Image 1 (cartoon, rainbow, N blue to C red):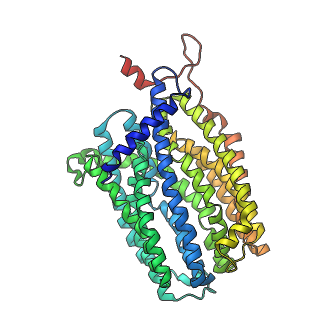
Image 2 (cartoon, rainbow, N blue to C red; image 1 turned 120 degrees about the vertical axis):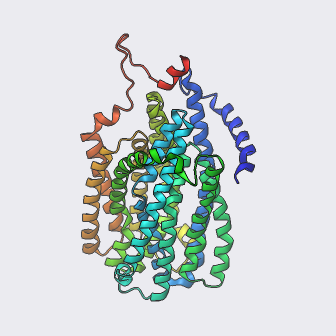
Image 3 (tube, rainbow, N blue to C red; image 1 turned 45 degrees about the vertical axis):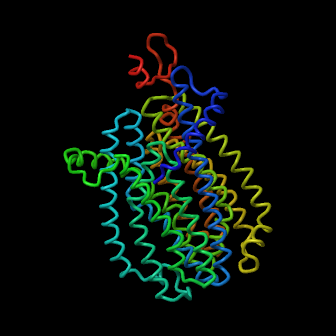
Length: 492
């Protein structure tokens, strides 16, 4: 399905090769591998720019076109439900992230059979998890009072809300195995395929969104043409892996290794899952906290402020997420020179971009908001300032977290997340309730992130983390050397 894109991809690689030849990446035989990693990352970033640009257009249009006819109450309900997509992404129990690292290690070992086993077992495992999650969420939907979750002052039709939540949960469960397939693409260092598919989905969503808004469509329809189309388009990646022989429909021939692989995936995935739970507790429940304490109308202000700076957060993700597979590949090959150099470039680049871009967005926010939402919504300056600062803090944290994920350094992250979650939740409930200001939910996250990251990483786990970057010492010469097992095997 994606074969027609092979020619443009070859052209991109040829041009990128010329550009990267001018840069001093690697030494000896590792030079070609370093350049190939950066070429793959550059292609993923280029496709991510395209898909994220379309996503940003959808984001702006969804606010400008829907807020006038939905009103703050119904718009706040839609944003509250949509915000749960990130929160419920942890329902894969970290299996997708574990699959990324394991597939990258198998690729580094040049073992197609092992890659096929891991991908097949991982996707089937995620399918089972999605089915179990569907049953549990369906049961909870008939137990939980949605008005309690969204705030009792929400003046929204109960039938519309129930239908929207039901559709959202169905799509979320379908996205569990499909999200794992996306992580596999990054483990194979082919993340661009995911972004090409997403771009096609956004191109389909935009005219449908305009058509629905012209007819004042309800919240369930808005969810279907935004989140729903993206979930359905991800099925193209399943077809792609199946045609390449990397995903088996009936893994009967590999039943002997299925239990072993499942245990390995679940073991690593459980650590990622705890990290996801911590991150969600620290930041994923902001909309629910605000809806409960201040009302869903304040959620609309928070959503618009966050989406105003989402251009920055999406841009940082475009630069850092493609590096995850590269870090995992370099870790599997024990290529510490690449790890050290890439981490430095990532931290310095994302930090500089975040500070400049955040300042520009904050300075231009009055004009941007007037053009975007007009007089339908007023966003406080204190909230905009808080989101601007949080965007900078998150940029540094995101770049460093991608490195830690790639090298499999999870225990230090667990400690940092526990500290962050404890501080963030305590401050959010206390400060928002005390000052009745939505900005404090963001300032609480800023304080918690700074304290947790600097205290845990720089004080408790400094030596452990930097051990991944230091070249091992050659016992014969007494000099630091970069060791690459695969290169030694190739030379022999």
